[in-house]
Amino acid sequence: MKSFTSSAKAFRMACGIAALCACTLAIAEPEVLLVLKNHRFEPAEIKVPSGQRIRLTVHNQDTTPEEFDSHALNREKVVPPGARVVLFLGPLKPGKYEFSGEYNESTAKGAVVAE
Image 1 (cartoon, rainbow, N blue to C red):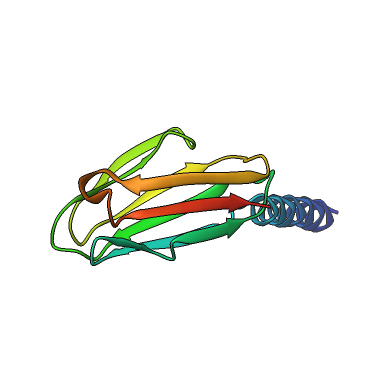
Image 2: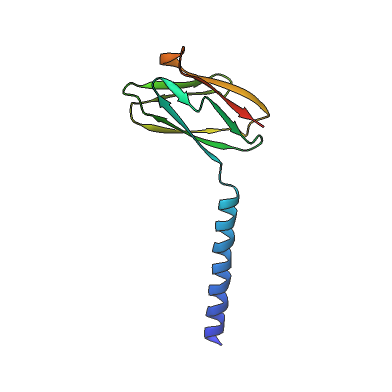
């Protein structure tokens, strides 16, 4: 009887862990990669699902720092040369949210479009 109790307990524990993993996967944010190259954001327009939190990774491939700046998204973050930074956005309402590179505003421009 003792082995049955241990087996039942182990089974319940395994089911609990499986359920936790499934929930974690179900609520993971969509991840979007934004690259800074030649003082421009690539892609310049990012489409994301509205109503969901987004994980935005900004990779600066230039040799100079840049600042991801967006009043619409309420985000401002310096990205050192060669580095990556992660920003969490949203959940966003449907719409267009513009951003720019503060150090190269004339070329580093883009938008997040939530649909």
